[in-house]
Length: 263
View 1 (cartoon, rainbow, N blue to C red):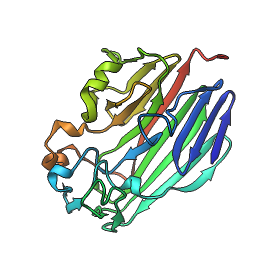
View 2: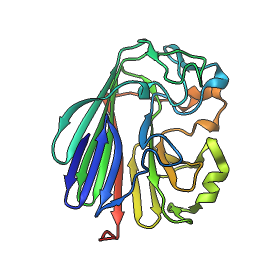
View 3: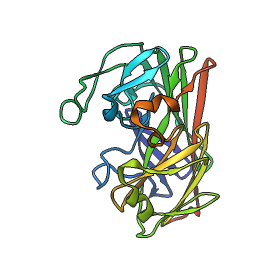
View 4: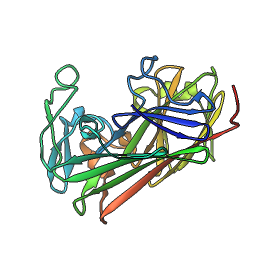
């Protein structure tokens, strides 16, 4: 377990997963063991969305790839490469076409092995600033590598009627629940505020939109994404790819809190 501290903020990380973000003792992250989801955060890379209707195949400029839902990155282990009192950096590396075991096999998937036709390095950095936590994803690899990126954090809810607010609309929890597993799409958006007992604002850079998901009233996932996968049939998932046209590409998620105090 890694702990970061700055002022009244505390972060707990295990194997690259954000387990806790507390400010003045108030916990903002969904906790493992609570109803809703077995994790607190994860990444969706190099694809977002399900693939079973496409027989777990995704088209790329370098040929087909075998991918299960949300990609193979989550099947790789993070290595800690840097740690200070306020910062921790984790790395995952992949060699093109290396077979990776699928943890969903055989109970939830027919595919035992996953693979991707590109080399890549994936850095995840946590850094505490003044009243905020910034999470940075740095992707490097082969020139013109095809990819999508999504960040999948889950936030704890305490009120029965929390609101999710953008610059254009207010979204209620029942609206998110009603969409189910497809997730509620919030297009063309880089900033969302979760208004619960306390207020948390999520600012992003590089993603472009969000999707919202939950199946229970005590948590909600607010997920920055580069592509909403349900916009196309699964056979056409490749239409959502970005391409790595420089040495690296950086994406940021900035979590900031308001009305801090002793609760």
